[in-house]
Amino acid sequence: MDRGDGMRLVLHLRELHALADAERAAGRRIALVPTMGALHAGHASLCELARRHADRVWVSIFVNPAQFDDPGDLERYPRDLAGDLERCRRAGVDLVFAPDVAELYPPGAQTWVEVGELSRGLCGASRPGHFRGVATVVAKLLLAAKPHVAVFGAKDFQQLAVVRRLARDLCLDVEIVGAPIVREADGLALSSRNARLDPRSRREALCLSRALDAAERAVAAGERSTARLLALARSELAGARGAELDYAELRDPETLAPAGEALVGPALLALAVRFRTPDAAVRLIDNRVLVPEAPERVAPAREA
Amino acid sequence: MDRGDGMRLVLHLRELHALADAERAAGRRIALVPTMGALHAGHASLCELARRHADRVWVSIFVNPAQFDDPGDLERYPRDLAGDLERCRRAGVDLVFAPDVAELYPPGAQTWVEVGELSRGLCGASRPGHFRGVATVVAKLLLAAKPHVAVFGAKDFQQLAVVRRLARDLCLDVEIVGAPIVREADGLALSSRNARLDPRSRREALCLSRALDAAERAVAAGERSTARLLALARSELAGARGAELDYAELRDPETLAPAGEALVGPALLALAVRFRTPDAAVRLIDNRVLVPEAPERVAPAREA
Image (tube, rainbow over all chains, first blue to last red):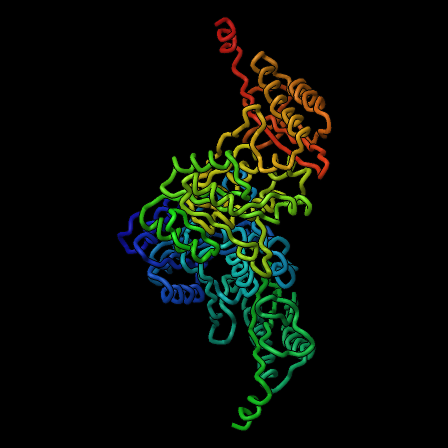
C-alpha cells in the first residue's frame, strides 16, 4: 500500500520479502519490533530503541493463535488495528506488517520450532505449548521481514531468552536486542493485559513491582539467601487480595536454571500472578535481575 | 579463504552471511545445494540444475549428526572433504560451505524444527527423529546461506516434501527445486551409501529399480489396483537375496497420504530395503511417481 503518509501497511509476505530485499540492497538497516498489537507506551519505547539500531523501523502486528494455551485468553486478547496504526504513525514507524492468520499459517501448515530447556518451567510450566507457539511465530516473522535487528521487551524475560537462543541456534543473521521494562508511574509494568484489570485488581497488581522492590532492597542490604528472598517476594504477593501466585522464582538470567542456595551473581527474580476479575482471570508477569554487589563494594556504599 | 582457484571454501557462518549479503546486494542469485559430502554424479547433476536457476552455485558439505538415528551409520558415513572439494571445483561450484558441528550446533543448542504429518511414516517410521534432524539442519543451512533457490534430489522424496513444507510454513523467501533421480547405467539410483555395498549386494540392489520398472509397466498396461501394484513391487524385492524389505508404499506425491484402493492420479511408489553386507546393513531407498493415463488416452496409444 501507498506510503503517502510516511508509513506503509503490508499484509502479504511476498510484498514484505521484496521490500526487505530492496532495503537491504540499498544498504539500509531494518529493525523489526514484533508485537501482538494493543500497543502502549512500552511498545513505543521498543520502537525508539529500534530506531537507534537501524534506518528503518518495522512493526509486526499479529495475534498469534499458536501461543495461546487458553482459547478464552486468545478470544479476549485486545485488538485495535486502527488505533495501533495511529500509534505506530506517531512513533515514527516506517512499515507495519499485519498479516492475517492464513498468511503465516498457510493451509496444511505443520512446521514447528521448539526451543528445549529454556521453554520449560516458569511460564512454560503453566502455559503448555506457549513457547513452541512463540518460537514458531518469531521464526516466521524474522524470516518474513529479514531484519538486521529485532527488539523484544524484557518484561517477557523467558521469551527473550528463547528468542536469543533460537536466533543463534538457527544461524539467523539477526541481532536480538532486549529492551528495559517500561512502568506506570506507580510501578506496574506496562502490558496489553492491564486493560483487562478491574479497578481493584489494578490496585492489587502493584504487589508485583512491590515484591521486586522488596527483594532488590534486601539484596542491597546484604541478603544472599535464595530461600529468604523468595519468601520475601511471596509474602508481598500473598498480601494482595484476589491474587493467586503462579510462580516466584530465582533463575540464572541466561540459562534460566534455578539459582543456587545463595546468590553469587546476577539472578533473575521472575513472578507470575493471576488476578480474578469479575470477567475472567488476568495473568500478569514481571521480573528484575537482582545484582548482588561484592561485599567489599557494598560496605563503602552503606557508609555513604 | 581465497578464491585464487575460482572456488571459495567457507568454514564460518559470519563469513557466509557477509558473502550472501554481498551477492544479494549486487543483484546476483544464489543457489544452494545442501549435501552430506561423499559427492557423486547425482550431486553434480544437482549443481548443474542449480546453475540454471542462479548466478552463483554454493554447495554445503555437512554430515548432520542430528539426522542419524543409528550412531553406527553416522560413524560409517563416508567422508572425503579433499575429494569433494575437487569434485565441486570440476562441477564449477563457486563456494563450498563446510562448517564443523559446533558452528551449526553451538554449545547449548536446543532448537529444533519439526514438520508434522509429512515426517511420519515411510522413512520417518523406521528412522525415529530423522526428519526432525533434517528439518533442523536444512533450516540452519538456508538461514546461513540465504539462497534464492535450494536444490534437493528427488531420491529422498520424503525429505523433499518436508523441505518444501518447511520453507513455505516458515515464510522463507526461497524456492525449493527438486532434481530428478540420477541412475547408474544398470538402473541403481546414485547414493553415497552405494559405496558400502559388497559386490553381491550391489547386484541384488537392482531389485529396487526393477520393482519400480515393473510397477510402471503394469500401470502403463492399465493396472490401477494399489494392492496388486504393491504386491508386484514387493515380489521383485523379495526375489533379491540378503534384502530385507523396510517398506513399499503408494502415497500421494504431495501430502504423502496413503493412496486409495485404486490409482486415480499420480502416485508415489516409495521403496526402502536393507542389504546385509559382511560389514553392516546398508539401507537404500528409491521411488518413482506412477502416472496413470486416463483410459480414453490410453486406448489410442495402445493402437498406435
